Length: 447
Ligand code: S3P
Image 1 (cartoon, rainbow, N blue to C red):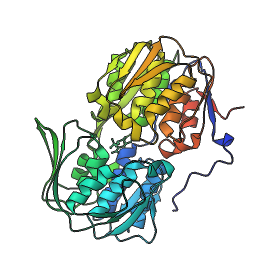
Image 2: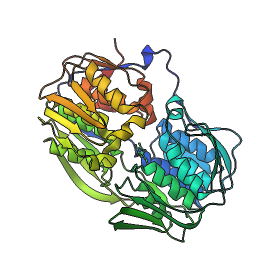
Image 3: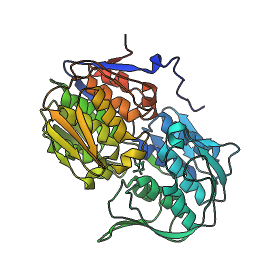
């Protein structure tokens, strides 16, 4: 099948969405598959011997772009009856530039995988991705022996092959950087070791093991160490992708702030390195419940229920940032309804996401009548324990998570909230508005 693309909006107005106060959200839903796991399943499947079958793959534009890239690099990628079949092959230099669209994970992991192989490939992305730093991945890969044309920004041409080992300290706690090194390391000569003083999400390590590679994890004083062992050949396996906690965050927080709500997200990924948001919300007094805990493909999952709660402000420590790095926009929305200040520390990385999220959160809260400020890498939201005014038009800067966060805010604010460029939501959460409407949310095109 051909890989679908987001249709261009007929006009800027057609790409605008508005949310209005709702009396209560109710229901049990399934949100799309985890984005991080989906990218990795396609890439590892494309490198492995045999056919990998992936169920529950996120069919958002970011992941579809990775599917197209893996195919362009020589693997077979097909969707049949809702299951994705990936047959690995020896990767070859593609005939055209690989466009990873909006996806930092896609491009950084793919550049890592290509760096290990005798392949030459040029990568680019949309305007947002072309503005994001790539040096964090290129520098360690260069130390391993890969060659690049281009600087810290895309487009970048990778000339892979002939790599040596590396011992790397991942100071930024970036799972994308760690994963790029591990993927390159699959074809490197020598020990490959990534040390993390602050551990980042470990889906690459878990999935590499599922594909038969040796990956050892050691907890030492210097941090958590991921070490590639001598067995680095990948064999196909079947992957069932759990529901994405970074997407579940929107309906769950919406339920916490809309009076009279009770919403359950089924089968949500509960990997401890991904659920910092739940800990933060609990510290704010949120009523959350986890039922039916189980294992799915080596990952913990469960059904998470959120009930409307009167929350209080809290201090969110910097050590928690890696486990909730994509959830600060929606946590800031929860904080806008809480009683007292919520102080979020250690947010430097938010400045280099799909947008400068620290700036986008502050501007969006301001447009909705919420008092907030930043002090260095700290964000402070002054909740008043009541519904904020709303009524603003929020500029999303083309950032899917900013769009969904402020649509959630509008569901419980005194006046409706409008967001621009809402089409970008389809990069990570296709069907977001429809799913929210199925719970009773009032989200739609402005009249
Ligand atoms: C991701 C890692 C995080 C996160 C991104 C997905 C991944 O980025 O923000 O959405 O799948 O590895 P960093 O590695 O830059 O922290």
